Image (cartoon, rainbow, N blue to C red):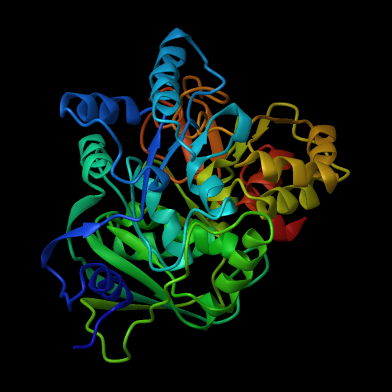
Length: 425
């Protein structure tokens, strides 16, 4: 029976052929918790009477939203997680000492592998599909069930095949590809389905861009996003392995040529401009040309998050900002996704460029992305953000507006004081 890559991953885990729509119980290779959601999982874990984690080396706990603690409540929340980590001597515990946003720090530590089944109590857990894994977000009690049993229940999703073809134009990145897809199919266009990204554009797309692409699969309602293992995946994991041993072996799957898809979406990117998602939905995408015509003044620019806080993004922003200044009435916040990215950016001189231009560089955190801290928007303020959501009130006041864009657009807009085209600088 012909199968998609997502179906093959599940089939390999349960030892038999599976088909879309089937409900299965499956071993989980990596369960991920964070500072916000894990206290609920810990409570459920303890109330169950469980005395140990089913797979302690396959559980990662990352404090990435509100540390260093922003207030007493977040400090107490972090304490619940820390106490649990120390009680069970967690190997894969990440706090200020190994700080990073979960969806970027785990791959760089060799904890994410092709062929894995991964769950996390954060909707953007689908980021890890960029490495050829099935990865999805679940609720806190689902995470507790996996902590106790090492397994979880899944409905095998149907797959939508997304074929990106053509050479990308200047300043068109993975962020623009996914925003264009969501613009076309809507925020529920892939509801409970796998988005399988293919085509010659993907074959030449760097890993950072692939992670951005898979990260926002959930913004189309998808269960997971996935890119098949190839030379780019191999090169990324080889680089990781040179620093950290990988958690296990790479298990490589490819979709069969005659696999069944619920839909095939074809997108020619050769004429695609940078895409900006206007408030208040990621599907409200507009072309760069339209955004320039609309002459939208802004108050804040944010470069960071699990979507676009990579070394690549910092390079893009610094290259545009070098020798220039952030507009007088604009504040620019830059959040590297991990400490390793921050150190590399410092070594390359990128942090000096960004600070000299007028940006503030923070520790790795999810804080600004969800309107928690380190960049909360006030009433009526507008922000160009490289994050993944622009719902009403997402980054602060309900009257504020968030425009989603890539890092080049963000940097150009910081200079101009309004949404600006980086291709014109």
